[in-house]
Image (cartoon, rainbow, N blue to C red; front, side, top):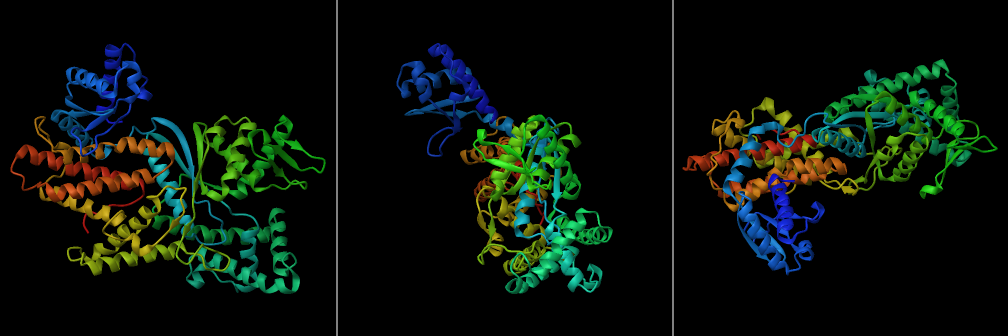
Length: 589
């Protein structure tokens, strides 16, 4: 909420109390930005107060307007349009707000660090049998951005992933490597480790399909070998464990290189091989407490029908764990590892929505009170014109390849547009990364996470419209203005309290000043698209304002300083917002 909205809300409450002898609840008071065709900057919706005044909306608005102008120094005049009270705010108020915001510098919009409860955000969480792909890019960018937004909103944040390093999937790659690999390593092949292991996952699938015709789906010899290897792994076979460690190590090295290139990081890593047994212990505790039931065949179930869900298997009759068992153990371990943790946020695709509803209910039955506050950050699929991604056939959209394509596309677009003339050769590779990766991240984060996306690599790198490069280009332009004005530290700018801003400038300022509220709302909703679209709104309004309002050539010194402050505030707010999306902003392009 803008500070003026707080002032007006209080004034409306006091005014209603004095005029109509009844005080409305804060939830009944709506203060909005005035529509551009009407006079004023803020509008109060009057309709809810007519039952207090027992008068028409126009009469109620007039009485309130007169009261507010008389008793609130920041309001200079009013206009009633049907049930809407449009208020004109004083020039000194806007000058004061601009001064305060620009003095905050890079801290504008950010809440004090660790001033709110600790939240853990899980993202990425890949299998170790293949490289990261386009879907992982959305997952990582979304999880990382939500973590950064929560941190900016004042939360202490822990970024984690659970690495799915055990199971039949990695055994398939291991069997194929033994059969077809001839000792191939990342060093001997020149392949990244994750790509090498992924290569043998594809090789397994091809061999498996060739055997199905003769042996059937469940009796194919290569599948039986993989199952036998899994049994040996679970039994602790030293040779199998050694190969498993070696091949997973290759994958981790490959993942780390991709994460570095993506610009994401983690505070702690969890491994399924370490946590899956913990879940079994927790399930047995649940049986002892009566939260779960063991059936005659030895399997363990939880009954969630009273919560509108089904019965859920937690341990098979042979005592082996299911996927839910592992998640129960991991969740409880994390709460033990981080005693101050208020909740966990799981960045996982929308096909797992039911799974997490069940998980959170189970945590509650086990006495984990934070379970009800845990959140599944569900998101839709990313598709290309060719269709959905697949991994077993080797047609997956590889994350490394896509990042390379984004760099190359950024370079091609820059060359075609003639935008490299003033960029030194040595600085160009980093610029292509900033623009290419920025385009990709912004494209994936600018929409509601729940929606599926059709990704167009070339269309995302466009210097016109709602794109990352458009925002970056206008940011660079604003930074150029400040350099040409010899402004090294914009926090030292002084704004005269008597300066008059026009309607366009006030509208732009109101948009920028909403940054703290948008960050707060984006954190509550776990939705980076709110921040992304605010960055676009600021940029679009700034670009329009920049065309019609001279800055360096403005002869009125007070107005020139105010416009430099607007320029500085817009660039700072956009840089902050884009950084929360993981987008780096170039100084020149």
